[in-house]
Image (cartoon, rainbow, N blue to C red; front, side, top):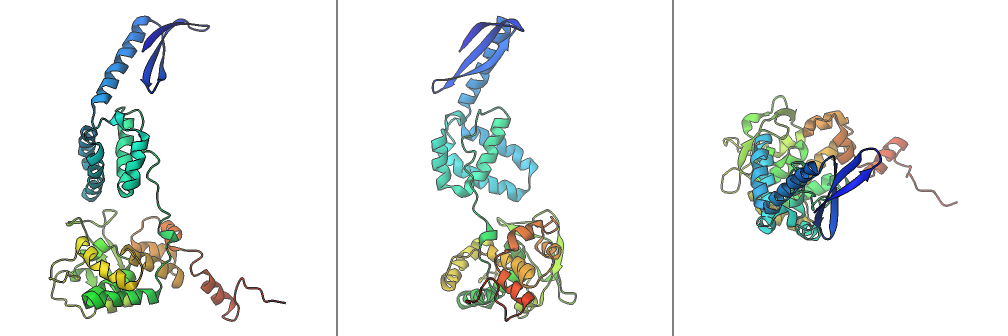
Length: 343
């Protein structure tokens, strides 16, 4: 660090403060009208820097999560805790300022799922002036997303349901078909009670979800009413209605994500390819919007989107998937679009 006397044309004599920031690099903190003012700025910078040098990953995580818990839903807080606790195993005892970009990238490659909450936490550290730079910025690369997934066909869904029945019985066949034809999130299906279903009016009241073993409001913090389509109604027609929950685990308890994950392994093994339960919801969006031609606004209401259909267009439209079939319907079955007959 150094304070240098400089002469400027407009302001006359000034005192510049230059500080060493590591790796042989320096930073100018500015110029000031007196040496005393320059020394004061230099002293404040040194005090702040020493504080940063002592602040560990655990110190900041504890501070950040305390405030975060007050601002978000319990489910969002628990998700962030899981990711940040994973990060703390590597960086908890380290000072924030000591984490190098190469270390950050190595960790991020091995823990992609946990990166976004860590980036948010350390962006907050930068904003609060507890860190100069966030070494994890840019490392939370996202996958292409569901819009590029090939959606299940009706035949695929029937085959998946048959695999579920083969390994786990009629309850799980019903779970697969019901989830696919309602578009409900799996946590909402876990928390569904018979009293939530109006068979006479053909409606379902989605009023809760099960997330991390806790009952909570559905995503978006509000209940919604959706249609009970005939395929979904028929799927659960033979289930026992004397129980409170619609879907139960094999031993009779409430079905939950951990239980489903255990059961799901055999289902996908028989099905023949890796598939996430969320793709059942994806099937519903695509089936209604593309196959059935239901307006995007109505599909959005069924799925619980609050954007008037924008997400339906982006995620479930699949302009390429089903496009040929739509053109055939428009031009007639005897016309094959995009194929030119040889002359």
